[in-house]
Picture (cartoon, rainbow, N blue to C red):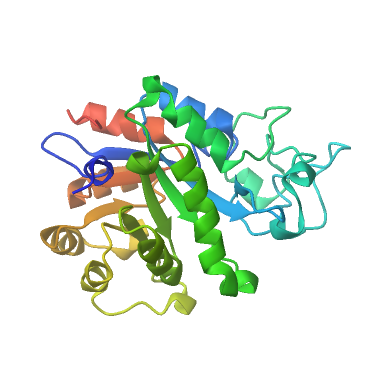
Length: 291
Ligand code: MG
């Protein structure tokens, strides 16, 4: 089993913590500052989202378009038009700041504690790879989510090839798990990089995903190493069943103390949270460790 899968699996007295988009509850999402914070606070597992620019640079941002609630233009105002990331070069993208969140929106109101930081830009995937390649971050692992854009569905192979090029060039293959809701992208990952483990995201409440009945068996048959269900979709029995098949179970996005406690009780392998410190605190209070 590749080491990077062990890093996401529990063992006696240890449940893993994954920083969601770095640590979205505390620092601006999908920014180098957020990733540095997670690593500095002893959370070595980082979840983040990757999209491709017009000049084929894999960049770290959640949506296939600019996001009104977090992107600001050169005047400092939140944007009104959500252009596709694929229509912008990396240099174009660098003209936007992403260190603040629009508190007048529901999205902004959901993260009242997030630090607001001037001067932050959308990072290239290469920047994060360079950070975790540093010897001081040898324990760091990437849960690299490939975002699927329905408008670009015919270019999965190209997208995967660009991402693989960056992680191979930076020699972080052994620290990377490829993660997606788009299981066809994960099949493409397996075809191009059979050596890199894959992680299958699922959510039951969104019918377009049309989930098979026996999800863990399906993931196992597709060569998956991790199953990442939404935390409201599962029972303790589901977790145990997937684990008997050898899958690691990583739940998202678990932010409240009662939900964190319930997931610990369910026996999950890892908890992905916008508040990794809050998960540390619950594990610590219950006599558990996360690495
Ligand atoms: Mg994600």
